[in-house]
Image (cartoon, rainbow, N blue to C red; front, side, top):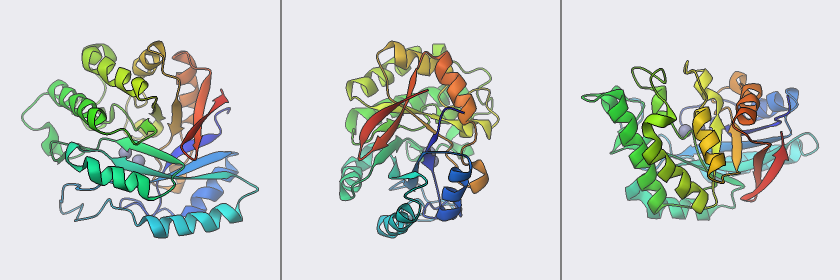
Length: 272
Ligand SMILES: [Zn+2]
Ligand SMILES: [Zn+2]
């Protein structure tokens, strides 16, 4: 295994995880990882449902940071622990997100689109009354709209996240079908000097490819993109580090020789 970083991790400081931060760190050390980033959820204005009550995805960052600093110190000789956040982007909360991103000295900020037109993409409602292709296209348009209005992030999380919940998953899905809008998204990310992540949670969702698919990674590279973090998006200890070997194979296939870790928001390239 040559990728020794997992840069997308959730713990009990995220509304949808009960994972213990110290157990996550111990697991990462046992796998031989050198760099990890905790990226707790901060999704302001997340739609309220019986499963996601008001404020469900809003992290208590002070408490989170307090615990992280204690554990960072305890394991300082074993592993680099980065202080990150996964910010949920929506066009009507740009100012609030700018404030969140500036309020703490994060090492790493993921910008993710989980909510489109006020609907959680994980809810069946998002796909109601339209084909997967229409639902996927609307998602990508929303990604582009968010990237036009907001830029305080380091990488875009799981760029084709929407395919995880389509009726057909990624069976009929390809970069080529969405080339027009996807090229605009990738060009925007590159113009902003930002990166994208390879998210291996796709394995858990039964997808044939990781998020995003290999052709999108290849295209990002072709257009001049160089910044790629790798993350398992683990919400449980057992998922930490899953698929890093596969991510490495995919990155090589897409033409990359480096992956990226961040420290104090500054990218550092690591040879594959
Ligand atoms: Zn996410
Ligand atoms: Zn996540």
